[in-house]
Every structure is written in structure tokens, then in C-alpha cells.
Length: 298
Image (cartoon, rainbow, N blue to C red; front, side):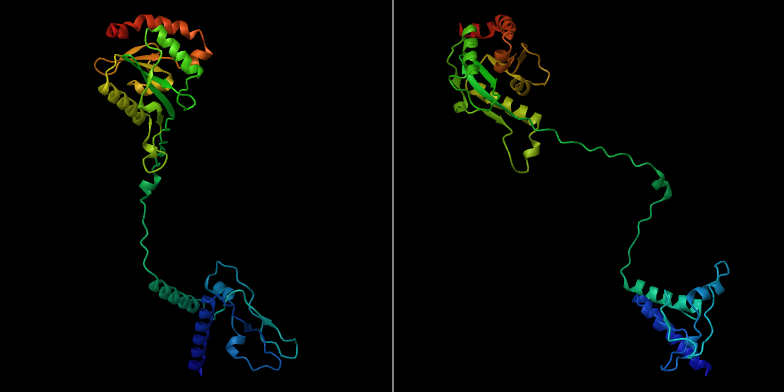
């Protein structure tokens, strides 16, 4: 008889463990139910998990034990759903759960956890500096030729010169003052030099200032190879920046470009129209540097 009861206990333990694994509540009778099948004695005398744990671990406050069996005629039918599945022995209950956990762990793929040494974790991680991409310059330049001089002029609107533009009329006046023809030839079929050259694709972000300077200087070199010039007028901030070898070229200065050609830095035509007093400085510089193209013309 004792062996049969032990077997029933073990079966009930397995049943409750499987139900708990499926997150199902386990319902046990607390007393004999009226007009119901007779409950097994070991179920009526079942102890809650809290009571068993209190008996095993004295440090934990013990829960009140389950009331003894009450006669069926004293109270109506009552069924209580314990918050957690119950077990007669805490060690048996834990052993079954451990076995099920080991079985589930064995079925899962092994995961290798990377262990960071405490010395490495304690070190301060240096801040990562995010390098912002260099902005792409945007400009448009007009290339012209007047006798033995090339003219590289800023185009604020990006549109090529028109015959009635105030900027173009001012340029013609400057050419007459310098002793050059006031009917310059438009190079590249009057098409401006624009940057950036690409507006889509993988190379868009590589069109930085260095690439723009290399492009402008290469175009000037090709033009000088086809027909030499002794001086290249640079009118405007963008023309000075991208035709010169450096960004910090001074206004009214003369720099060597290639053999036999000089770069002359000047304000933009738009700035001259807005600030007429700049004409005085330009005239002074022109008187100083005009020998460059006059000797060649003579």
C-alpha cells in the first residue's frame, strides 16, 4: 500500500510539473466535495509550496498550514486555485523542475558568451570622434580670352554672361583700361565651369575642395597648352580660391601658375559694382602689373 501511494505521489508530481511548464494552474481539493467522487487522501492532505519551503528553510517565515479535513455537511463546496503548483516535498519538486530545465537546455543550441575581464571593463572607453564629410563646394565660373590674357570670372547666378549684363559691361570697361580688347572671346563655347560636376552616383561625396581646385587648374592648363597666355585674371572669391594653389591668396597679388603665365587676383565684378571705391585699388594694382601683358603685346 505504501509503495502504491508513493507511486501516486510521483505521478502527481510529474503532472503538476508538466502543467506548470505549460503555465497552467493546478487545482486541488481542500475538502471532500458534496455529491462528488471521493478525493484521494494524499490530495486532501497536500501541503502548499510555501509551507514546505518554510519547513525546509527556517529563515523563511512559515505560512499557516492547510486546515484539516472538514466534513462535507458543514460547508458548501469550495475549490481553491493555488497561485503556484503545490508539491508534497520541496526537494522532490525542485528535482523534477531541474530535470525538465536540463532537458530543455540540452535541446537548445549552445550559446558561447563572451566574458570581458574586469580589468578591461574597468578601463575608460575613449570617445569616438565622428569625422564629418567635407562640404561640397558649389560655384560657376566663366572663362574668356582677351588678347594674351585669360579671364576667369565668378558667376553669382550660375548663368553665362549676356551682352547687356552690368557685370559684363564693367568687365569690358576694365579691359579697355588695361589696354586690351573689349570684345573678349568666350571659351568652352560660353559654357560655364560648374561644380559639382556629378549630382548622383557613388562619387558625389568625393567632390571636395581639393578635387574642385584640381579640376579648375587642369582646365586652365589645357587652355594654355592650346594657346599660351601671359596672365590669368581671377575675378571673384571662387575664381581666386580654386585657381590658386592655396585658399589664402591675397587680393591684388600675383602668383606663378605655369611657365610663362601669372595669376592676378581681383575682387568679383559684383563686389566692384556694390563698392565703387574698389576701382581705385584695382587701378593701382593694374598700373603695377599691366607690364605683364603690354610687353607681350608689343
